[in-house]
Length: 247
Image (cartoon, rainbow, N blue to C red):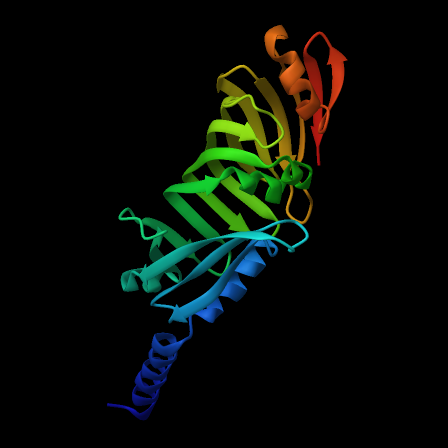
């Protein structure tokens, strides 16, 4: 065997050894870069290959976050494609979903993520003070995050929506559809059911707060209970109609 071939094999073995012992904290730097600081990995334990930690979804000012337990296991075969492909689980769930990390982007597929309603306040700070309640499910067929770009689609459903500022509960069930076209993540809102009817459209661009414009409609019999809540975030147009503009 030639000297150069031996040298090549030696370097390959050395690089594999470095990867095998690389700390899990390296994933945090990659997440921060791809999400412009919106996603971070805290309390990371293990290595790039297998580990656990707390995945944090942070607000635009990076002052508050919602954390979930995360565990990951790499699929070594995908290293030949120049990417790290992980099987990921959240909150000790039995179902795992794939997350691919490459130099260009981070891609998530076929994921179902449960979130508290308070997560809405992370994306839109104006909502944080409303004491929102209810259960949210984020379904991601496919989303890819690169520096300053988002591609793919997802659906966020909010069931049993409520607020600490009204006794009307639930306010309703709602669905937010998300479409990433590269430059921005577009959002469209509709009401599934409930006394408070909401609809509207918005967009989120990396490095900026999301912007949303919509409408709220309240039936006459619940106007007295719901109007004070809506006036905190919307303009009263009369006859049970309110104009929403959130940033």
